[in-house]
Amino acid sequence: MFLRALLRSIRKLAIAGTVALWLALLGGLLGRLAWPFDLLAHFRVQYAALFILLACVLLACRRYWVAAAAALGCLVSAVPLMPYILSEPVSAANATTREETFRLMSLNVWFRNPDLTDTAQYLEQSQADAVVLLELTPPQANKLVPLLPSYPYYHIEPSRMGAAVFTKWPVLSAESVPLAADGAVAARLTLDWRGTPVTVLGVHLNWPLGPRNARFRNEELAAVVSFSKAQRGPLLVAGDFNLTPWSEYFSDALQESGLHDAARGFGLTRSWPAQFAPVGIRIDHCLLSPHWRSVASHIGPFLGSDHLPVVADVVLRK
Image (cartoon, rainbow, N blue to C red; front, side, top):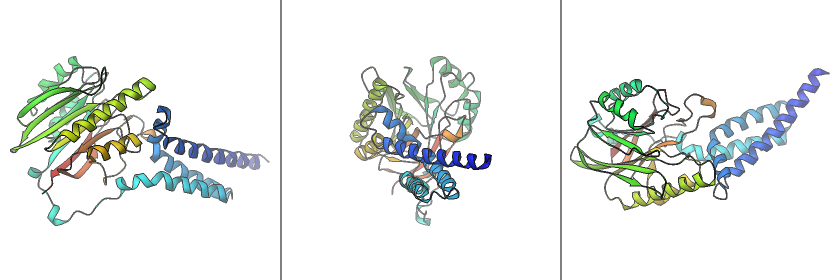
């Protein structure tokens, strides 16, 4: 009797879970209508995994039609993930040396991070050509700069939603770039990489909780698009975007700007929250102008922040 009641409860929960997941999935497709819907778009990986689990449970409970609906939900959830899972084969003609590769890193160090010693050691060992740091407070910057002898050139925008760009290459120019009135301020740095001017834009867009912050985030993203379209030379945009590739805002921004995601083809890695992988999503990105081709992308280790570092190896197209 108890077992039968337990199975009945599991069956009801599985059916209810399938309905709830479909509502969340469909809600995420309506992100432009209201900011809460856009938040639902960010968990496509979790939706796909949960749909698979529910389909298996429903098959075991002999609820075949609902299991089919769960399987379809998994398929719909997984379609946008495919470009990140499926990688293109690398031919011998496209093989690159370390000298040809530009390594870009982005890390939200977290303003509450009490000790950046591990961060400094990781950056020094990373061999990155340029590093974008977010939430770097002035006291943290004062402690971190002496610990980075490999990065003597930098530009730090100290505002709350500012960014910092560190590089080992000589700087041609640097400036702070306001992205929205009373919103985030980006850090732009143009460096001389083996005789080629390369522009790096470090950004930290607003966290889109609430209509005001969501509006800020969208205005800032639009400014990044405008900035990118105005650039003629090699451009790299990196930072904490506070949105995932599954958001319509993100995909539209890539299409309008001509930028592409360095992570495509290199797996479904998360960058936040660092402390709890099951709900992890990728909101930190390295974006490339058409001048570049991505040859590798990965996530770095836990460094005391709520974000993980994102690293991209890119080369100029021949």
